[in-house]
Length: 416
Image 1 (cartoon, rainbow, N blue to C red):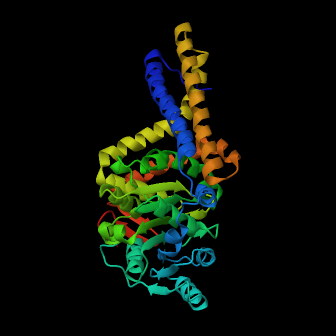
Image 2: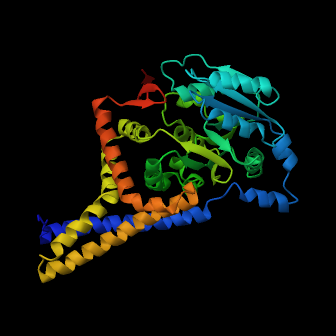
Image 3: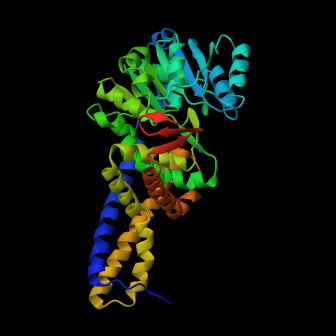
C-alpha cells in the first residue's frame, strides 16, 4: 500500500496552515453563536405589541399604505402560494402589484386570475415590456412595479416567498415605523428542495454570515455591510427614491446587496432581523447560485477573488485531507516528528468537529432541517470549494457571462 510520508519541513508548513484553519473556525463558530443570540427577531415584536401601551399601532399600521411589489418570471409553480399568503394578511392598508417579467409559462395568467378574484388587494397587474439592454430582468420588473405603485412604503418580495403568519406585514411595518427605520429586511426560512441543498447550504450560509450577519448590517458605522434579503425587504418611498430606485443598480446581478450598500452609504437607517418564523422562501438557483456570487466579485477584483476562493478551499477541504495523511505518516515518523504529527492530527480533528458544528447550528436555527445532514459537511464543503473554482475559471473562459433565470448577463453592463 502506498503511504504518504511527511518530512519535517512539510509538517511545519501543514501545521502552520492547520493553525490558521483552526483559528478561523474557532472565531467563526463563536461569531455565529453570538450573532444568532443577539440578532433581533421579527417575532419578538408580537410580545412588545401585546405588552406595550405606548406603541402607536394606528399610525404604524393604518396610516401607512404599503405597496407589495412582486416581480415574477416563470413562477407558475410557486406564485399561487405566495399570493394566497399575501391576500390572507391582516394589514388593513396595502396593495399587491404583480409584475409579469416576460414569462413563457402561466405566470401572467395566474396574476390576472388573482387580480380578477381579489381586486381590492391585487390592485395592479403589470406585464412588463422587454427590458432594456442595460438592465437586469429583476431590477426592470421591480422598477415597473414602483412606477405603478401608490404606497408610502414598498415591500419587495420574491414570487417563491410565502408569509407563514397572517400578521407578517403588520409586524414588519410596526417594526419599521416604531424603530424609525428607512429600510427593514428579514432573513427567511430557506426551504431546501433537494438533498444537495441541505448539505451545501449550511456551509455556504456560514461563510456569507461573516459579511451579512444582522450584527454587521445593523452597525451604522459599517457602511460596507449593507445588504437586503431579496425575498423580503421594506423601504420607505422617500428613501427608495432618494437612493435612485432600482434604476441606480439596474445592471447589478446581485441587486439586493447593491441596494443595501446604497442605503447604508447614503446614511439611511437599515436594520436586518431574523424572520424565519414568519417568512419562507425556496432556495433556488442550484449550482449557478455560486456563479452569481463568484463572477461579479471576479469582475470587480480578480486578485481578491483568487485569494478568497483559495482560503475557502483550505478551510473546507484541507482539514479532511490532512487527517488521513497524518495518520499514514505517524507510524513512520521519528520520535520528534511523531509528536508534531500528533499535534497536526489533533488540530485538524478539532477543526473538522467545529466545521460540522457550524453546519449543525445553521441546520437547527436557520434552516430547521434534520441535523443528520451535518455529517455530510465534508461533501458539502468540497462541492462549494470546487464549485467556486469551476466558476472562477468559467468567468475567464466566458468573459464574465452569468446565466440566471433564463437570461445571460455580461457582468455589470449588459444582457445577451
